[in-house]
Length: 157
Image (cartoon, rainbow, N blue to C red; front, side, top):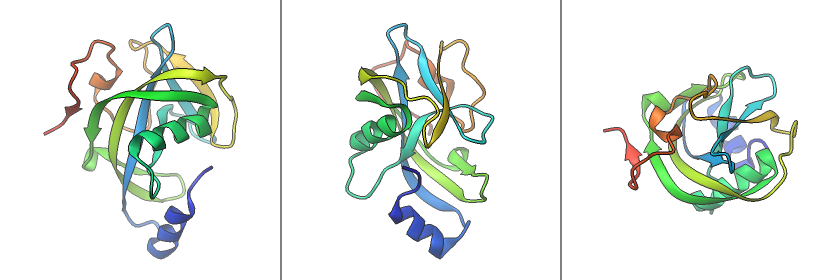
């Protein structure tokens, strides 16, 4: 889908200025316990399946929507792995748009669907084992990639 009308309207008013944005990220695992990563068109680095929370959406609804839009998969968020924000979550897109994400990271399972490779948002989709995580655009603690996590959500103080 790309950028929603809500965020387009904000960008028209703010230009490339730093925008605070609530977002979701999915650690989506297959049956082999590998994690799904995507690579957007014209980008070299990989990334987790992610996106902005839209007005009126719950974070879990946003995660399900983003996963379907970017991968073609019907997923179910199982639990929150972590919540991250601050300067470590700042990112500048190739078009100059600056964002600082407040990111809710979900562990997700695949319910149904087939990977939709080379779609409108993503050119590559691939599963990686947790000990072979590719270079990624956004910074996350290594903790989120571990299949051996505590039950409570992780955050940085």
